[in-house]
Length: 375
Image (cartoon, rainbow, N blue to C red; front, side, top):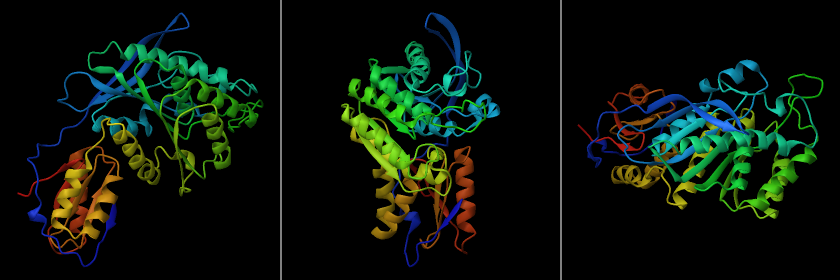
């Protein structure tokens, strides 16, 4: 939670215009396995599927996959990591969000990827092909679902998952419309068997990205931070230049250094607040599901001076769900709670945080992407 003050603001909170608001409803989350065939062999891939309750028919698919970690405990518990944030954000925006755990990770069957077995210089294409086979197989499995619209699929991957999604874009399966690559690349375990990640021969990776660019014309969004410990900014720019020179279509963003390792851009709170608005703009530009900021902004501007409304709007729209904004009638105190396990908790924390700031009673004004009517 964080405190936000905008002094000398006059606000009649109870004058906010709003539509009727139903009680908060948690996401429908399904922990499952996909039975797939990869290179003629059967496997079961762990998956998490989420959508908003009440949505009927076939939904556009946000196909999400993870990075890699050299620590065994982290490999076994991918379902408990920050990837749940990616699933939630896309599900809340109207997608059928599907997180696929590749072979050798989590509870999925299959061998450990090459990249975790020691350096094999020059074989990054093979490393990524092996793992992209998993996502291609999952693509086919998801198509069998009655709630999946496979003509509208966006692939999202972090770390090696981002590189896997760029490879998937190069394969151009029917229905894949775009890829969002967050801190994408691949490293390997050193030949000495230690857990220190290494790039083996860094020169080997840009040509792989160049080859992807030659085969792909799907729009891609590249999101990186300058202080990524695995992929330095200049190295990333070189990979991106190679991709674009090959013909790849890309929108590129290099964010300022984070207070933590920039490779954690996808999950670090300060990282999410940078890339999430960019991703929303990317989706809206293509008329794909996102949230509509207009009702939220209009409600604030109807009651607040423009500078204050813009201030709260920018802060709130960049925060991940589950979230809520509470304001005092004076407008001089407000509190945004975000990233909570439930909407109810977000509202409770927001209200408590706001009320601690002054004597006037606060009210929850925004909750996720809805305006809350005055009582």
